[in-house]
Image 1 (cartoon, rainbow, N blue to C red):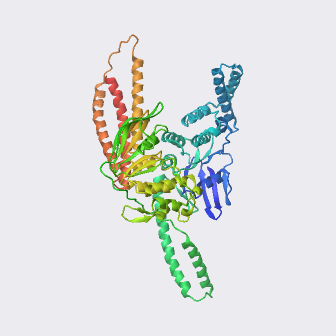
Image 2: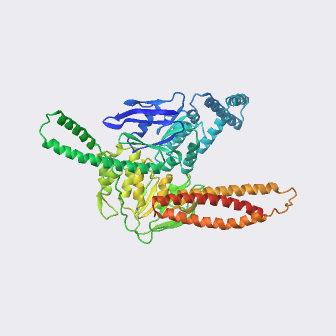
Image 3: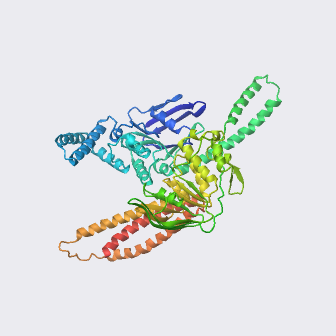
Length: 636
């Protein structure tokens, strides 16, 4: 069943063509990601589909009997409305019933706290409950409460104008997910969310019975939610039915084929050009037709074909033996402890990720290393050869309104590459998306994302040997992220990254500092996925142990006398003994697979087989550990 048809849609801004005669559709239940470079029209296309902008030509057709919800990058809330009114501005009976019920509950709690008369409010609440029953709105109510709690939205009477940018984004996203909708359109839904919230939304959308079209730069999120990719490139739309790895493979094939076809066209063009120059003026209809064909060939050759980008690997300054030592570090804000007696010694070339909930001290930790904050106790000692490159969330400050190229040349006119050669600053900027003509743009005319990108590139151009990056992936398109990953993967210095981008972390880091709150930091060897699997397994085992403990307590008889021991049967005893051996074997195999996956040596087929076997081993290990726990409880 077709929900959406985009038919020969074109859009131009001034002289810039965003897309021309693009056509695609969405079937019921299809979950598609739209990806493209920044500035090529992703958000414009979503606005056209949502009816907020008009196309120059073509049409968008939505099925008549479906509802549509849209999350734009910038919300359209009025500053003077409350969060509650913003969330429930839909006029459907169910939404209005839930809004009335929520208002009654909150007002009644406030009146009781203030010891005011509540009779009228109680009667109003009674009517609201009856209306909820009549409309069977309680499931909707529980869905709303789950979403609001996950997004940390508690004070629904607060005005929108008092919220931070991140809180406004979360409110807009909550409103979009709360709506009972058939077609969901999302523009960068993971912005301003920490990993835990992204994973919750990932699970929610992957299981939701909804048709989805979204723009996202989060490749892990894309891979978990979508199995269909639309790429907007050079004004055209390309469709890939598969996950992100499949898209990369097929795109590479497409570009290779286009380049081969382009080479043939160029060869034919030069052959025909020679004929045009040497032949007399066309008099016959056959010659005229050949000249007309040549003009068409000339136009085709003038079209640029994308080439696979060359890799740019910068050469850091030399590192000495002593890198960075952190000794017994303490730091608090008032009563809130962010670091508690933390120590660590960095080694040459290590790449470390930092993860944790918002507010647990990740950015503070980086600022302590950079000397922007002073610890309450302990010390940080950097080696004499260390040259830090620090990319902060606050961005860079530029005095006066200067052009991009002039700002860059204040830091470096050339950059030393891993090969020993030097490239110009302008060429480096062009590689990361600042085209040569754009480099003469004034800094104040850049978007927020472009300013962040410029800040990051300047950080990289100064040839540091210890890079500290705080959320470096925000506001970057997937093409830029792939180039940045390639550069950092080959970086020979030390790397410390705070990021909620799990794909980015998985590719780059050797180990992870996990900020658990209350100053506690766990050092986990492996990438983010390794950590998540281990953490989830620990949680499942803890829950199972708690369940067994509660079960044992319920069996405890009155008077404190224990029942007769329920010893293992012969068969169970045999199983229990074999489980210990099997678990040990699986742990060893899992460790070997982890080392192979982290080593980066092997063919794509090897990595696919190792990854598949890792999942099988981990699942078997989880199952056998649970069974061992059950039998061990019975053995006691």
